[in-house]
Image (tube, rainbow, N blue to C red; front, side):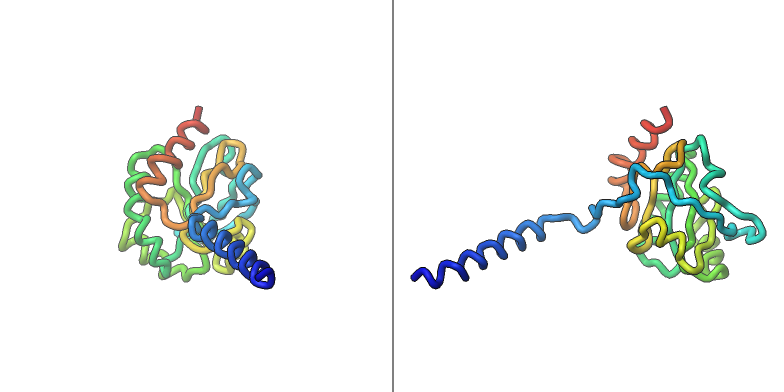
Length: 174
């Protein structure tokens, strides 16, 4: 009888871990960058490749950095929400075009609308690595001091925008 207790105990522990794991939200991956300065970079702009953009250009402003690509299916899902947010003028949105072809990105923005104050090009994905991008789309809220305050993994939804991102932007703009 006691020889069955050890396997039974191991089985119960595994079932407990499985139950806990199934109740976790995979979109809530903690980012080690939240609360830390946004990684520095200088990249060419999508529309004007001769011009560069750096996060230090945004010192003193609260802004969003949205990582997107023309090949990204989920980016199409969030795009109308970003277009409406851009029209509201509540917070500037800057795009980080990730591992994409310039011509494809320009065509995509022309077709679906351009919510970005400007987009920058990360062809090799090095800046994405510095920001800890798991996949596109991802969106970062960056404060006036250049510190990342929030990271949205996956598409920005209306719910996430209204309940998390916009209240945070309002608080940071005080």
